[in-house]
Image: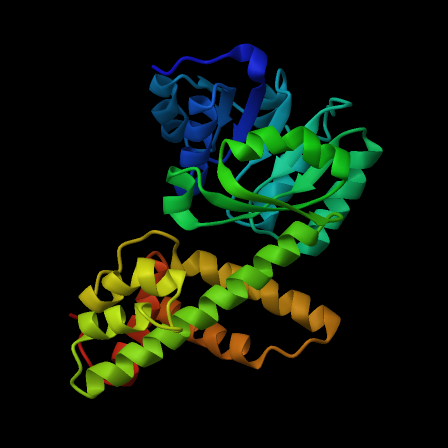
Length: 301
């Protein structure tokens, strides 16, 4: 069991999935007390040997917390912990701070911010980039939207989970930055798929091709981290196809509302839809390469 310094701060943490579990563990390692909640009781029980205390619902997790953090799949789940039966607005604790680190709709974020502010609760949108590896290593990039004073209150907690902590501006700015991040990641992954597909069809060794690309201007995080799995035909889940498709939907919604054309994003989104239609939704992001397997009538390694 890890030692905790309760005087450092108490965190109510909601959402113990692949990312949230590691983030909560890093808060424990940094000396914060964590009161954990998830709809899956087994996920809460998993954290108890590490020093966390369990909570039966969000209100229980938030009751004695200096800060409440959520890491959830999509907008409806975040709205539920704000507006739901045991949500933060049912018995708001004035002066408290709520930070959502999920990737959700910027429009919903601005509404949540306004409603919580009216109830005396500060709110930050603080989505992250870095994937499961970044969550495990406490090396996430955290993009934060909301009031500056609230950001300064939350910053020490962010430092326990990430290394690049940036206040992007007003409410919703963090989510906008994250959507831009996901746009770049998806199109980059698509470019890697096309390079590997062309190299494979030409008879080039894909491990060598990846190494050569990493040594030049084509190098990228995606090529370094996901390239080996793509070459090996390993589709095991890290950041799932379903989650990236959800993020790309949010990108498209934002772009449509602002009349910004994103043709490359539209194309890669359609390929993610194709991947999910072929049962790849729970596979890792690198399974996008299997779309190219099907288009070129090739078999994954």
